[in-house]
Length: 106
Length: 141
Image (cartoon, rainbow over all chains, first blue to last red; front, side, top):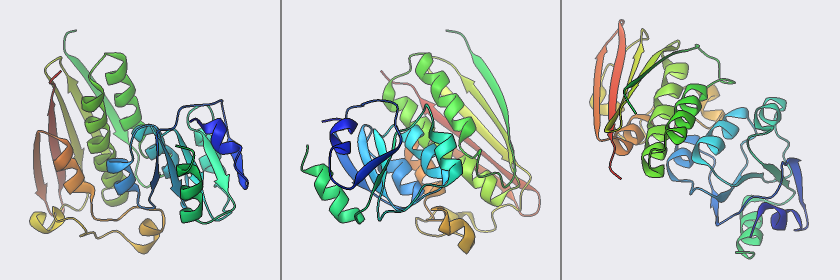
């Protein structure tokens, strides 16, 4: 499964997308220290955090993508920081529903 | 590979650049071919220490000494110091403000995460003078 497969799901749209990358799991968390320490490499990280620090953690933890839930919008700084570095997606649904949908693709 | 010495300055209160030094060192370690687990442990510890510098200490200096056997990183700041280091080492304890917590920080996992991710950690701190944290990650294939 890859990020392109996630994008085919209803309600999920790209915010910063530079091509498909493999996804091997789903991780849900809104605390950056927890995500930094525990987000599995290659996972899809579902969160409601919108700021640029999410991009820094996603890059360092080497997750496959960030999925911002609840229909929230990324900050401009987050979008700028992610370009060429981290795939950012958006979901119109809450964290749980988003994670379940992505998990079903695994 | 011989020894590599790197030095960086962390700017105070600049959350848009927080994590930058950790990213640079991580890429350097990857490029040098260090094992992925070593790279990840270093990145986790560095990010936590770098963020602490931004949140609590008006920035500071990071130096990294990298050899094939060991990665040693020193984080030195002239911030307020840590009054009770035992308390600060407890998971969940944090003095971060509400604004900081709203950004997703301040979970009280910084120092515990650093300790868990490293093979050696030393904290020298004096209230009103600053804090120096030294960490080492031993390289095992």
